[in-house]
Length: 150
Ligand SMILES: [Zn+2]
Image (cartoon, rainbow, N blue to C red; front, top):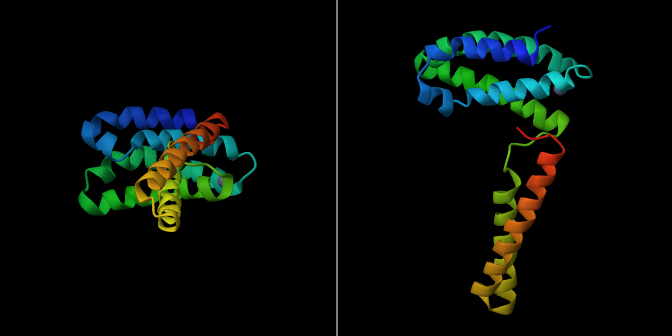
């Protein structure tokens, strides 16, 4: 069975075949990071074990796909998001910094509601935003500590 290490080696081997900006833009690093998580879960998850094979293949094919116009690119993104989706749904992983913007939006909304009740919009929305900012940072740190972030 492929390992995260062998996937990383393939990614590195083919890295020179694509543009540097494409490597960043298409989050090729995320492919490796998710391979580490998938490998970790694969001992207890059949789907992860199967995905590891698919990831190994993608680690070989990705330069070809990314250099192949919009069709190859969307195919690559589809496969990468399939891995991320499974890690999120089946194993509770989140993207790094996922919670803060969500909590800030909720804080702002609650602030708006409190502002509507109290007629002190600016203060309430400000407080809601700050609370969301702090609570989101705490939640993100907690997720990162648990090792379930990508
Ligand atoms: Zn799994």
